[in-house]
Image (cartoon, rainbow, N blue to C red; front, top):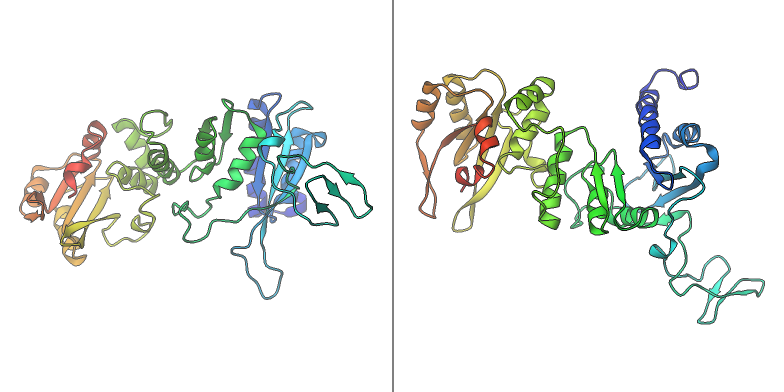
Length: 372
C-alpha cells in the first residue's frame, strides 16, 4: 500500500484500520457478520484489507447506499452514494431475510399482480407475501437538515439504515458491536430492536451525545456502563493532561451541557473566556444566558475578575466557573462580591458560581441548583 499510495492521509487511514479489522475478526462469533460503511474515496483499498483479513470467499456484497441529499458539483457527477461491505466469518451466518423485505415494484421488465410476478419472457414467479429482499443498492434517504432524528453530529446516519443492517445480521438478544459509534445511531437501533450492544468511540463528544440519546429515547440512566470516562479526580487529571478540549467537553457534560443538545454552545479554540453557554427563561418569555468557563490548571483571584468581565461583555445573567483545582479563599470572596441574580421564580442565584470537578463527581444533580 505504501508503494502504491505513498505517505498520505489514505495510507494513514488504512494503517489505522488494519489492526482494528484484525481485532474485529478475532472477537466475531463464527456465525457473525460484518458491515463496514465507507465512502468511495477509500472503499477499493478497504476491500483489499477486508479480503486479506476475512478471506475473499467470505465477501458477500458491496452494498451501494443511495441518497439524494448533499453532494453537488459542476465538474463531476454529484456524489450521492456511500459503500457498505458485507462480510461473514464463515459459511454459516445470520441473515434474516424476512425481517428486511420491501414491497415489489414493477421495474426492470417485471410486472406484479396478485397471482405472481411475470417477466418479459412471460414466465411467472409467485412473489413472497412479505415482499422481496432488497437489492445491493439501498435507496434510503440521508437525514434532512431539519430531521427530528438529528442530534447535531456531523456524521450521523439514519436509523432506517442501521435498522436494516442490525435486523438482517443479528437476532433478538444478540450482541451488536459498533467500534466507531460516533453519535450512537447503531446503539439506538440495537436498543430499539432488542439487541445487546457495545459502542466504542475515542471522543467525549461522542460519549456525551450517546448518553443524552439513551436518556432521551429510553430513559436509560443507570442501565449501562461507560468505560474510560473519568469517575474520580485522578481520572479527571489524566484526561486534562491528555486532551484539554476533551476534558472541557466532559466537564460541561457534568452540568447537563451535552453535545447532542448544545452543539453550537460548545466552543473549541479561541473562546474569549466562554467554553459553554446555557439559556434559560428569565421571565415573561424572555431568554437569558449563563456562560461557563472550564479550567484544568492553576487558578487564582485574577481568573474570577476576568470571568466577571466576560459575563458583563456577553450580557449574561450568571456565570459558572468550573475548576479542577480547589479555589482559593480570595477567589470565593471575589465571586461572592460579584453580586446575585434574582429570578422571576423568587430564587436568588450567585452571579458567579465556583464549582469544582470533585463536587460535580460527588453530586450528579448539582447543576440543578446552579442554573434557574
